[in-house]
Image (cartoon, rainbow, N blue to C red; front, side, top):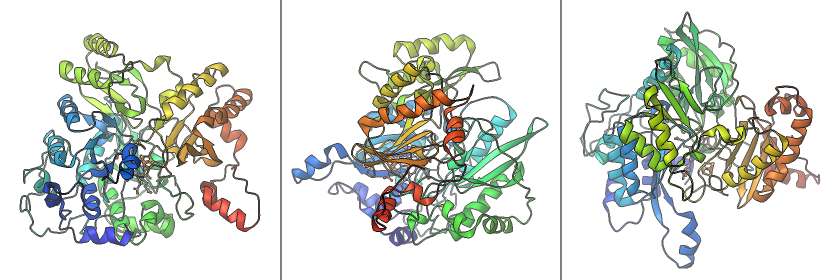
Length: 595
Ligand code: SRM
Ligand code: SF4
């Protein structure tokens, strides 16, 4: 679909309605049209087909096996026991598992067209929403996962909810299509979303106060990180916030802009960017500052080329100073100060049991690749969390590393939690290598329509082999950040990892090396093609060199930065496999991609 046509579809959608209702209700349609699929994303769902069956069905000249992915959105990953149980029950209308996402949401896959309304309605009535989980709007706001009961964590969570509420789109089409016109009553947005126009099905929609009629040029992501733990990967976000504390209370936030990881292999105009500090604002002005940045992107973002439409390109095109001046001009009454220095040490989740600071405990449970399912002979995640929610009524938090926190555990209930986890063979992370604890892979096959190779289904096996090497070298306690994605869109956030494997074709990955555990450095393309089977042996020499050359206490990231990098940011060419090859061929040169 051409980029201009997405703009037209939004403009002519009558408040994101299009013909969604008609097409969902038409039993003669196996799937919705492309234009309705564009609009459905704003409602939190994507049309997909089962890629495992695609070739066989095509051979038999049959239609694709169509279904929908539905994404729930919850600021800072917070979900109550009741809401979890509702998601669990909705599994029967999907392929049967829940997928925690690395933006602290939850996805159901394999929802058939005829069940889509029931699933979205079920989620919306639980007090969460799918509204704006996808589409050209502000997505789920990420926040620090740990439920520490101090002023700074409380404020960061409150801010994630305030931002989510400010940037919800306002059309009544969500209520009309999914809720039969009912009021939307979210846990974190208790006010009516659209009182004036609600339930006027089909009525022409007033322009949205923030998004207008064209919405944003592209998706927009916000995250809040508390130093020194960068669990939300703040430098990968379009817009980031980092609190600064004065006299025990949050005084204000440093604002970062222009992060984002999506790129297309071979398209030199696309590449990953780390966010840059923009300015510092007092706490009371933070949400208005966010709106000024979002509306600057709305008005200045590229609406003719979707591949260059993210905020990172707007900032690059305008220049950071001009971008800042434009934002500041939209905040006449706000005092803007210089950004404060930021220091992060890790993107990891703290796994295991911890005190919350209010007499209660929380337990961060490792979930392999975020997939909540009952594995034959392995962890029964689905049953375990269902039982904890049902029997103990404890809230959960989805972490940015797709693990699950069980929160608010009174100390006397810890044994009951432990017993349920043990009964369902859910392992503690203690015995795992530090590398496995932090590794992540995006979803990819069989549901993702954009994947070029396996990711979620492949990484655990690769980690088994890397684990063996780590143990052999005595590096099992050294966190080395390994991330994998099935295509260059970067959902698994591979471009700031120590090792990022980016799918190019079935079984083939580009290997990026040299990001950092703190998420504040981009990796460079180190090897154009590594086959899946060769990943462990390709990684081994780096681990051996690290072991031999590291200084006492030095992380892999620290060692790589000290010994292998010039300190210069990678050039656009260093991200692109095909283009560099082609350019070299034209110039008759042998290409060297190590960088
Ligand atoms: Fe993503 C598209 C899955 C986080 C960059 N992403 C997709 C789609 C919807 C494929 C599609 O468009 O048809 C994937 C659905 C797969 C499936 O079957 O479930 C998908 N992205 C995911 C998730 C589930 C991966 C995960 O392992 O958890 C994450 C959902 C988060 C959420 O709850 O909202 C997810 N995606 C990310 C991230 C990481 C982040 O946001 O922190 C990125 C990189 C950061 C960024 O946005 O720059 C990311 N996803 C993309 C892109 C590239 C965007 C770009 O600027 O070029 C696409 C493709 C697109 O938008 O055109 C994409
Ligand atoms: Fe799909 Fe690519 Fe995102 Fe993986 S990185 S989920 S393959 S779009």
